[in-house]
Length: 352
Image (cartoon, rainbow, N blue to C red):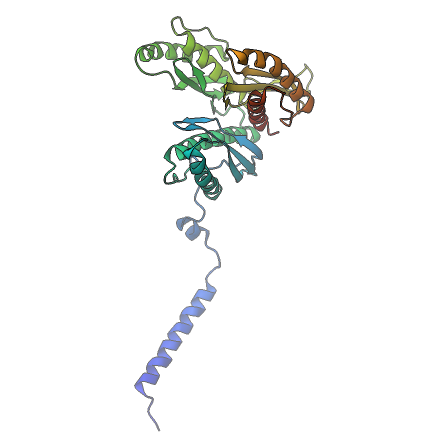
């Protein structure tokens, strides 16, 4: 009888081993949730990620001011997931046009991929990237508040950040915590700085914070000697309260009977124009705009005349149309564009 060659025996033994491994692998479950999470395929939701809870529609972040211009981000969400990101304001002019054109599309794509604000800055677009991420985070904060309302969080605390109010001495921005329809905490996340402003801010802001909690509204007295800071604080505070979801501090049921149309007041983000900021506040009842007003508009010189003639017509057009698809007023191109942009951001908060 011929003896098996040693090489042949080695080949046969190796083939048998491989066959055994293949068989074992074929018996292993196709999916392993534990190992998938360990591999990072399904990590738990973290801060800065898109809120879960069925948020639908568009959410516009606050405009973030950068060294080269404002950046403002709008998200489109479906069932709590970001399906689209876009910049509705970006730095313009000169070199900025080229940087914006190359960086913003990449930032938009990164947001959809990351489903949150944890994205890398684009090389060569440091300021634009920083402003983009700041506005993006503000949009996610608004979506989170909306998600909390949809889940019927009842008395659960919600954090609402107001729009930045520009004052003669610097920006003021207020953040409030609302629980059970009451303001439980107020703080200024931005306030005038430098020189005399440091002293005024340190003495006035704590008093304004206390007043906001005590009053539960933006109807608080200005602090003596801090007129501009107080005015900016109240403006930003009101915009934060306007963002409270249905049933919160600034919303109320229309009429005395149950089941009546709900009335909400919503303040849009500030839209920067060539001649000054424009900011719109709308009252929505039963899904319709019942009132529109400009809480900020260009001022001084020729702007006063243009504002006084165009804004009332824009207000009427917004109520008549029920949306931001309104015609610009002849001779007020910039004001009309800013009005429509801020109006749309207000309607985004209503999910409209």
